[in-house]
Length: 344
Image 1 (tube, one colour):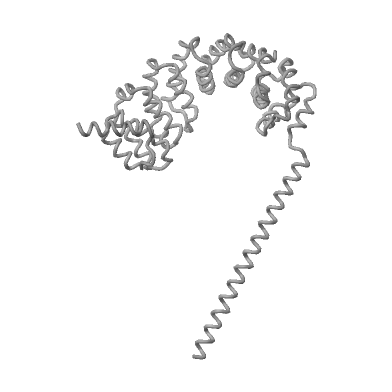
Image 2 (cartoon, rainbow, N blue to C red):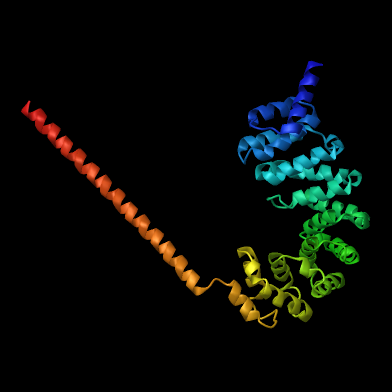
């Protein structure tokens, strides 16, 4: 009884405050002795423990858990394990295939909110795809397809953005694009921008994507975007529909009008979108001239960098002279001491 109470107290502490400063050795001990559901919570905290071999050794305790038990864990626990994989490459390399396989089996019983959270988390993982992860993406596409009409905007964004990066899920993304068309008049402009970013992988031959592009061109939704967001939309669509006259007739002048509101990131998007021959629109050169760094500014930056380098050189010179002075002083002291000893 005492052991069970102790384990439950540890689980409560991890749920409420995470693993905090607990070291990997202590976590490893907990993982090796605690019940599986508590071990999963402890292992989820490994994402904050870096990339060392000790982290991998601790993560390896997942092999103690049978697949059936992992699959039966609550979605909350499996999501935390996925988050640990997104935070730490060492954890991902050790447990991601196992976690992916468990999630694949459990997905049909999950809420779409949990499915979308899982996909968005996995999009941040920094290891090569595995067959288990590919199977998970395929299963997620099946589950999402069956629930497309009921997805919230946020869920739809997370699912489309993640699965658009998976070539095997192109058919799902095309189907989802049709749902976006049905809802685009009510989807908030920033959300529609993210969806367009995901759908762009379909190319200009996709009828649903082109309907979304035509809708952007009407300016009804585009006027709700900030200058930086409109610049990002232009960067996304320029390689896909460079000859769409209506879109660029809308976007170009609006960006020029809002040029003073562009941040450095927005200016970079403008340059990326319009530096080539196409897209074309009136006053394109003026927009590029307003967003590219000016020659005089570049010269001033060079002068500042040159001044900093000269100051560093002067500082190094002063340091060298001080070291020389100290060496000469020590040398004089040694000669003086030597003379004094000979006289004695």
